[in-house]
Amino acid sequence: MIISLISQKGGVGKSALARLLAVEVARAGWVVKIADLDPAQGTSTKWKARRDQSGLHPEIAVEKYRTVDRAIKEAGRFDLMILDGPAHAEQGGRTMARHSDLVLMPTGYSLDDMEPQVEAAYELEEAGIATDRMFFCFCRAKGSEAEDRAARAYLTKARVNVLDPVFPELASIRQGHAEGRAASEVPFPKVQERAVAVAQAIMNHLPGMKEAA
Ligand SMILES: Nc1ncnc2c1ncn2[C@@H]1O[C@H](COP(=O)(O)OP(=O)(O)OP(=O)(O)O)[C@@H](O)[C@H]1O
Ligand SMILES: [Mg+2]
Image 1 (tube, rainbow, N blue to C red):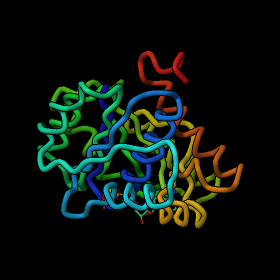
Image 2 (cartoon, rainbow, N blue to C red):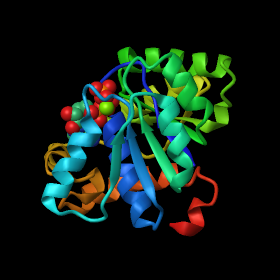
Image 3 (cartoon, helix red, strand yellow):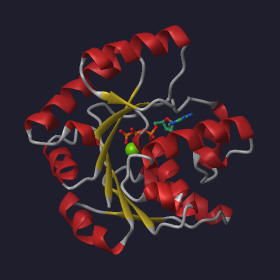
Image 4 (cartoon, helix red, strand yellow):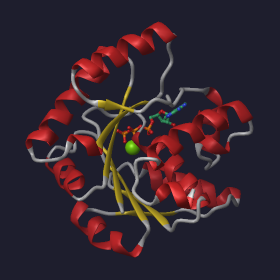
């Protein structure tokens, strides 16, 4: 199975979501790998090195791939391959999405974040990607309930799917990332709970995952 993290804008939380999902899926007993598709930046690869240094379990396989095609070719060896895409993926994004069981599109609450992401979703739709496989996820979210409601209303009007749980932006998650942890592994139960809820919401959309979890 393949899940893609796609966004027009940079820094929206693709890699954070990739590592959260990888850890939770691994905990559920799946063999998972993150394909780091931004080899110049190598965010996921560097995180994995810090994770190994911290001696954290489960171990998460991460590998840099120079092309999307190479990563896809190897996906069959894993229960789940997570494609951690670069910003502005365009053509690469379409290839990622075409091969994915699920496409996750992280966004913030601001119109500046949502607008390009909605456009990216429409482009994928035009390229033949089924809309029921695409899910927006509020990531790095800081804002009131009113802001959450307004952002959801905007995305609903734009006819895109949005996950219910929100991935909050928190100092503890930032710190966890620096130590090679995923958001569900920070030492605060409330934060863990919120992170796990995001991962679970994603896993619920994967065929065959509910039973495994
Ligand atoms: N929930 C969070 N709480 C706190 N910090 C976060 C959270 N999610 C991501 N970050 C931090 O925000 C920054 C951007 O996140 P991330 O690298 O996941 O975005 P990205 O979409 O993968 O970026 P790029 O487009 O450059 O690949 C990083 O410094 C990351 O550690
Ligand atoms: Mg990234």
